[in-house]
Length: 352
Image 1 (cartoon, one colour):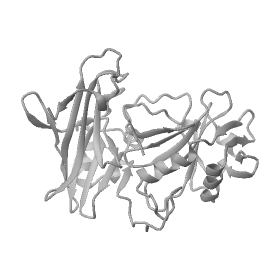
Image 2 (cartoon, rainbow, N blue to C red):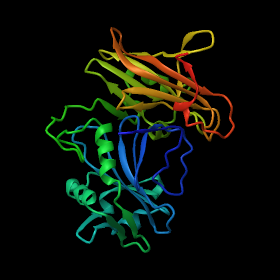
Image 3 (cartoon, rainbow, N blue to C red):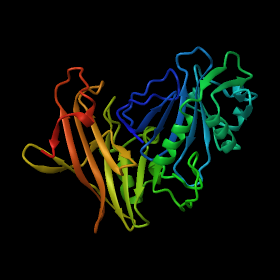
Image 4 (spheres, rainbow, N blue to C red):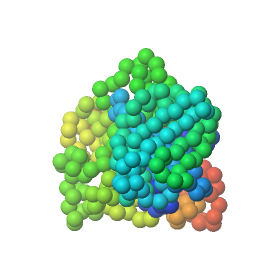
């Protein structure tokens, strides 16, 4: 499966009408009429977007975090903010090829993004819904109780999108897979997980984000919106990647830490200069790529992403824990409007 690396705010938000100016990163794939994407912490979603329409309901998405046996959530995006009063008696109705119908009370969920988005957590009978969607051709999604809310949804791409999520989260042929269900056992913990609160960071690195004098200090809402991630090789070895400071409109710095037996140290990122090898404390717009088990960084020279620098590191074990090995660096210095195939195709600066 081909996974497109999406960096620097190139992912659209579910909330139609709200732009994503922060420099988010992760993996992304357009599968026919759906968007499949995962955050660095492998919270993954499969989204259908009808932003060009004029209905109240604009987007519908299936979301799942990386935890073993995690429930399936529904995310709804609206063309205007939905109040609690509007949602109190509202019901989402999904009709698939006139053969199957599913309903969900919005009152069972909660609003996000000031009413532009609604989350229905742990939906009932998700396997029945997903089976109907993968077998179907078209679906009508409508909020009963709201005028002008119905949208027609093509189901082309749902199967491939669910496979994408299973592969990214390491669930292929596992008992808890969405689409590729098999006999592989479910582990006790996910190898990769999300951290959405500074308070959930290990105590010895937490001050880097709580101390207002620290370079990495972040407001809690900003930290939660971007999220840190943990890659755990086993109970003893962990790698943490966390956003550092508020960042800019399209470049978000990250710092990394390597943990061994619960003790964490800042992780230097190897890089190359004209004079020779060196290290850097920060990297920008980091993406964790689960299939290749590597990290990439794309520093954008300007917002449209036609220039800048690109780096890729492999995650390796040694006697000190998890470390990074520089696999390649690429750069394009001329901001001329030519993407030149994107950063993974730009001229190599390492290996020379």
